[in-house]
Image 1 (cartoon, rainbow, N blue to C red):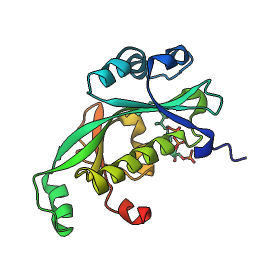
Image 2 (tube, rainbow, N blue to C red):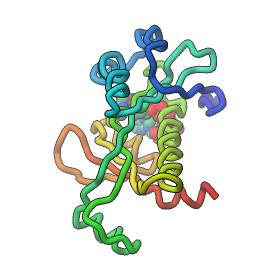
Image 3 (spheres, rainbow, N blue to C red):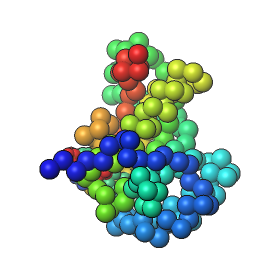
Image 4 (spheres, rainbow, N blue to C red):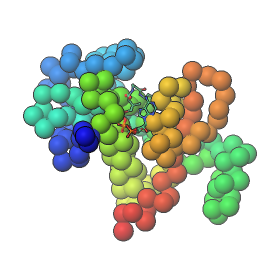
Amino acid sequence: MNNKISENEIWITKVDKKYIKLFDSFSTLEQDLIDFLKEDSIYNQEIKLSITYLFLDDKKQNILGYVSILSDSIKINADLGKIFVDKGINYKSLPAIKIGRLCVNSNFERRGIGTLLIDFVHRICINLSMNYLGCRLISLDSKRESIKFYEKVGFKILRGENKLQVPMYLDIEKYKVREK
Ligand SMILES: CC(C)(COP(=O)(O)OP(=O)(O)OC[C@H]1O[C@@H](n2cnc3c(N)ncnc32)[C@H](O)[C@@H]1OP(=O)(O)O)[C@@H](O)C(=O)NCCC(=O)NCCS
């Protein structure tokens, strides 16, 4: 049975005080991601450090997932430099949008919501880079246990050092074609 949730069953909205009543039913084993949603997401948006988008179910009764984004600049290391030089790009850093936090409500995992959250950020990057400002990459620091998910949706490891969080990136170049 395909129990994937489709895009037209989801409301996307910026975090706002009127959604605080939904925060308590948001569930994940990652306590820091609950804390961010409850304690920091609205304030960080007010002081322009990040914008958090909530994905709500069709009745607006549950937060299915959220993603918080901000601007970034990625230093290009030797391996990555070669990849971009081959694409005609020779800079020491590249402009990016960073996924600061991303989390799917554990009651709705493996139903495609994580993928839809990433698609949503893609579209923002494409819109920015075609109309407003240069933005070539999506960046993030993945928890080790989430690397498989990010690789599945197209991200690559930027540096594999042995830390709890692993920097990853996605080059949005090819999505320009999908937009036409
Ligand atoms: C990681 C996370 C975002 C995935 O969200 P999701 O909605 O379950 O992901 P999707 O349903 O879109 O999964 C797409 C594909 O990614 C892969 N994937 C997803 N979760 C995975 C996991 N835990 N282990 C291995 N592969 C995984 C699968 O190939 C999956 O496709 P399939 O279900 O058809 O096999 C979600 O589990 C989550 O929020 N976890 C806790 C918080 C977290 O780790 N956030 C990232 C912080 S860096």
